[in-house]
Length: 126
Image (tube, rainbow, N blue to C red):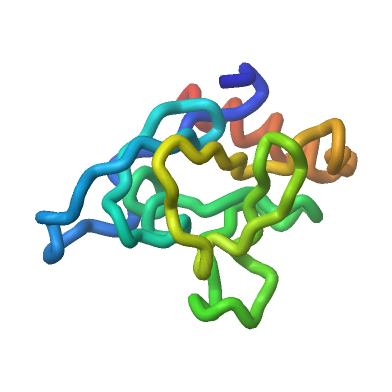
C-alpha cells in the first residue's frame, strides 16, 4: 500500500449479523487483501472492512455513501487503471482491486485534498 494512504481502520462500520454462510472472496482495497462474501456490493465490503468508503477528491474528507441506491455521487471508488465504480451497485468479484482515492495518474489530487490527507495521516498515527 502506498505510504501516503492511511490504512483502513477496523473494526468496520458494518457488522454482519446474517447470511454468514455465503462463500468468502478476497478482494484488494488500496492494495490490502480483504474479505467479502459472495453477493456483497463493494459498499458492504468497504464498510465491513473499514470506517469509510472513500475520501472525497474535492477535499470534503471521508465519505461513507449516502443514498445507497446509485442516485448520488458519494460512493465512487476507482480501479487501479482509473475506472470509476459505484460501490453501492457494483458486486464484489474474487480478486478485484479498488482504490478509495483516485489514482494520481488519472485523477490528480487537488491542493486541498493533499492537505486533508496529510492531516489524516498525522491523526492516524495518534
